[in-house]
Amino acid sequence: MLMVTTPADPDDLMVKTRQEEVLRAMERYRPKGLVLDISGVETLDSFFARTVAETSRMVGLMGGRTVIAGMRPSVVIAATQLALTLGGILTALTVDRALDLLSAPPPRRRRA
Amino acid sequence: MSQPTQGDVPIKSENDIVVVRRVVRDLVTRLSFGVTDVTRAVTGASELTRNISLYAGTGIMWWTTLDRHGAAGLELRFEGHGLGISDIELAMKPGHGTSHGLGLGLPGAKRLMDEMEIHSELGKGTTLTVRK
Image (cartoon, rainbow over all chains, first blue to last red):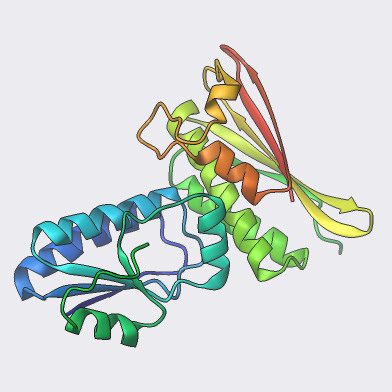
């Protein structure tokens, strides 16, 4: 598994750089999945959401599955009011549950 | 010494999106907004600043603290130094966007804030005022 954490207030360049690092790490370590721990994120705007959805599709093209873990309640509320979508990525309340999801066979549930 | 009640943040590049977020977060935290309203205000300001960066290129955000019947509030005025919006009604529709954004900057930001007003003059730019 590849585990990525994101800073509280990432700027656009940091978000894009992190995306490239994830794809390079997919190639180098060949994990079965990616857990994106966003529990520290305080501001999730449209650019961040779009890049996360895009990264998940890219990881999918490389044969991996992505789970987003730990979205804060205040971020959930703001993201929903902003009508952000994450393109059907699997989500989990905690990193532990995200790891459980990824070690199970591909589920058909909890699509965001 | 008392805290300032108004100020501004120039928006020159997309790097200033993070600066605006920090300024708004500090302000609403100082005004004792709850954590959900802090996140709403910061996220809304982030989207509106991104709009300026994407569509107008440059602009400025003016901020003023408000006393709304005893409750603390914040007014943010976003001035985009672009060409202006030709059709505000269309720009307010979800899913509309002429750049590579998601096209939900304006309606989304309106839902996050309490009030929003747009004034746009073709050739002169757009001013967008929000209050929370």
